[in-house]
Image (tube, rainbow, N blue to C red):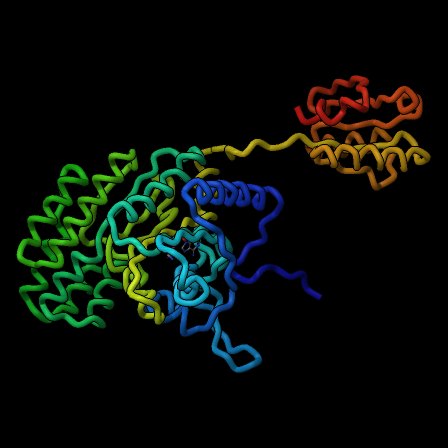
Length: 424
Ligand code: HAM
């Protein structure tokens, strides 16, 4: 038999990678609690129709889709928002609003693999359902800021836009929704010329071209220029005002806004309002992204319900932390290995190991039956902090020998004080 490798675009996360990912997950989960988001766990496999309904052509084409044995068309989730919107129309339908929901897990897209782009990756997802107020949009930016800050990331910044500006102009110029979606897809890929070619009305094409070229010295100046530029397009004007309000709230709270971009579009089709991404200079892919989607829940059969959310790309956050040489804010606990001096002391040593675990110390037991020198050498190689050496004479005196493997020092410690000595 040949040896097997993971499927292209999928990765094994070895212990250190898994630990790095889990530490980021812990920070997002803690942030969710601080902001009042309650966690739900939804299936990895969902009906194809649910996932494809408003995700947009880009994601639709990249889904892992198959028929299950019951002949149902299903897919691996490419994101969480559709699943949460499904819940908002079913099991969570009658929950009081606002509803704040957090999820974390793996998602699947048949993207072209490269640095920071995988076919199985991890997201932490936050949805705030039931409010159309700018403070709700600001909250999603702020909690993203909190995650980045807690992890110690430097020089990250937000790029913000508003789908309502472009859609407002296109609707008023009678460009139908299907064409609007195609235009936004092209704009998401930065294929602006291709995008504008799809607009038949010359005046409208010129207006959008002009809009996409708008730039101010600061994000506020750009937003203000957008607002003035779209005067006369009522919906676009309202969108620009909304964007300015959100910007004011987010900047007042110290959220680093890098750019405001009127031509910024995102691949997902369900967005109706503010959209954003967060980036660090070291990576050319976004660490997270989100926005407002006020129609999706209604499309899924619920009451008209405004909503806004974000997904953090956890693999990319880990990559950014590694590139910036950051350690996790979560303190690693000290570890120990318990080694009996001779086989006859196994039972006593096992008891001691269990006592330490009961006191919350992470303990390995020497199970290879090796001589002391070999067992210590192995513990040292695997970067265990302490070796607890269980000898007959010491046991009689209620003590053990504790070796600090990094410092290469040993001391005799009372068993009663052992857990505290290792922990602290
Ligand atoms: P998204 O921008 O498609 O948004 O994905 C969010 C984040 O997932 C991206 O910013 C990126 O960090 C990460 N990501 C995307 N594709 C890959 C990939 N192939 N490999 C590694 N990481 C990737 C959404 O998924 C929306 N559901 C966000 C949202 C929630 N909007 C409203 N609520």
